[in-house]
Length: 301
Image (tube, rainbow, N blue to C red):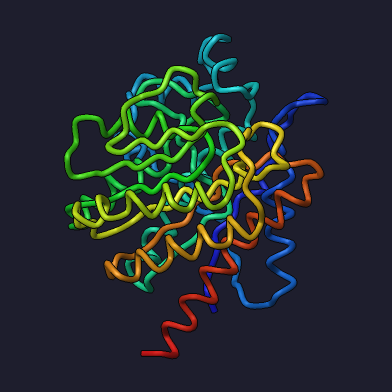
């Protein structure tokens, strides 16, 4: 039975009307629980030492003490709270736990994470610490030499790009909306900037066109930032993907990782459709696709 890690039991108190859909991860877990094919485990807290491999120690200590400046919290997009600290530590811990599982069993999933707007010394865009970067540097200590990030969230993975900008062992691929947040883009290893209202066919062509470059990198592990904010219904997305398009996207990534025999780590990423149930179902579909794909591969072997 595949295992997924979750941290939605750590609640961030948010003001009324806040843009972040705080309930979506819980809804995703509830949807997946109906299928009865997953085991769910609360995410462990990531260690401070693992965080500081990536992030500026002063920034880490100030966040954990709740003493960041008001401007820093505004850039992150969340008010200071004990719940924010716990959920941040568990979100990153879930991706690290999923990474360990992927190295053992071929894939692992975190029902959170994908906090790709977190830079080395500051947070932004609902992201405090960069869980993918934390997991990659942990994996390096465990003997992994080359990693790749396939970031298919509609917003560029600017923090991840910045953290690994001078590290040739990590390839960062970002397919994102050209005119969307962040408005000051960073330089990923591979950037594909999409015009507003890009649909399924064009999106899939763009993705498949660059995967050969990822393959040439020779990654020993792949991190899949599986945001669903490219949906046409997403209020922050600006693209025009359908559920069927997202399903095909996921299948392309799953098949690609399999051809490279690379363990795959799936992080949740963004999703802001209304009603929120649309977002939850789109996220759930990613993990269901991964579980079914790997089950078929196991049977085939």
